[in-house]
Image (cartoon, rainbow, N blue to C red; front, side):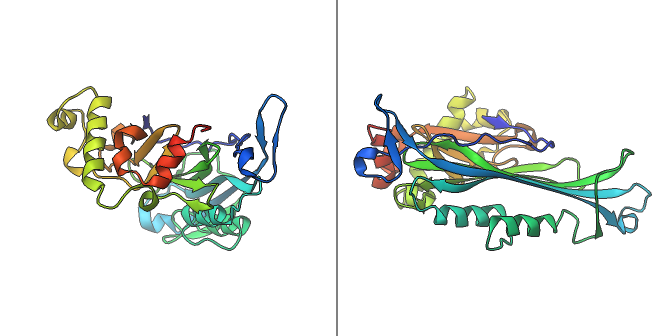
Length: 287
């Protein structure tokens, strides 16, 4: 799946409305209806913050009279409660992923980030209420953090950042965090894959990329615009359904025009490379 860069900030986010764990395991705060539906209470808060600045001193940098502004926009789907699961590690991990210099709380972290817009290292930033109607150069730093998928055993967040700093185009990057609700830990690449599995995973990724693009050789993949000699085993990886998804941001294995690339591999095709913990998640019959 290819994702293109975009500039508008998503004002509303889909709220995670259902996430369940097996009541038979004695999970707290779960209820079962007479029809056998397991209800697992989740509370999340959508937090947004917008800041607009006039960049003072920009004329000395650009040597023209075009006014320059900088905009910071954030929308965060923040987990408050997921049944009786311990989500402190999830919250701390999200803070570290979303912000270069996180504070103790999400609110403090958002305010701190809002005070450090794109171009702050070049110009003096003057807060203003809104952008003017006339033409101007606008620096941009957007960030969206939201749930992209979940099962009864884990939840996956995407932290998407879009930055424009005056170049030919902006750049969008996504990072993913898979959280094990049962064990209260992040399922990163080190937890997901066995040691020394890199060669086999790389072979599977290249094979899936060729299949996705309707080719049978790396040379043909190059002709499609990919950089076959730069393909690697991305640690920006997450679980979804019965797949392991390897994510590549623009320029990592293909030109900007290709956008970001997701290589989705069914877990059974790389089962020999997965750890028992992750295989257990996929093999659970009540998935």
